[in-house]
Length: 102
Length: 130
Image (tube, rainbow over all chains, first blue to last red; front, side):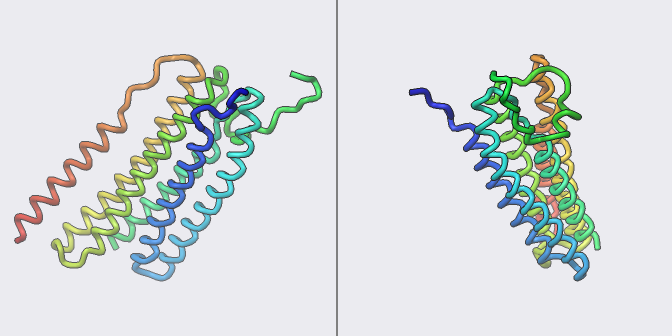
């Protein structure tokens, strides 16, 4: 019997996405709490919820899609989720800078 | 591979075609390891951003201008690390596809020095304002 998921890499990667999404939500909630104005808080909330929900959605699709792609020997890179994660984090950082300086 | 079998659309879709056109698919374990490393850096960046915000919320621990300056600095460094993490991911993925030497790690020194400088500044500020 061959183990198709030796090392459980796809599973570990999916878990890594979950951990990252969680860290994102926590950081975002801090931004919402700390926002000096209500519009700032709303912006931070939107960024966080949007980013987090998109990432969660991608994680589910990824995990299933990856299993199939691995079994068929295709590549498994997912630049779209990577870009999304980068964008949301940079946006959160910039929001943090604006909040800290106002 | 059967002719009736249609490949799954890439999870990355058009972005994979745009960013990772050169070379061929590497061993998927390396792609996934690269991705997990990127995510670890993102979590680090998020921790710095949260640290900056925590510092800004710390009341009168420090004088106000120094406090907001450091908080802004930490948040900005977090954003910078996130951007650099993406660059690292892209360069590594491309190197894997082209079977080249992996790029040198520049991100770790940047973060280490930034963090060390921030910690020393904080320490000096705390001691000076006791």
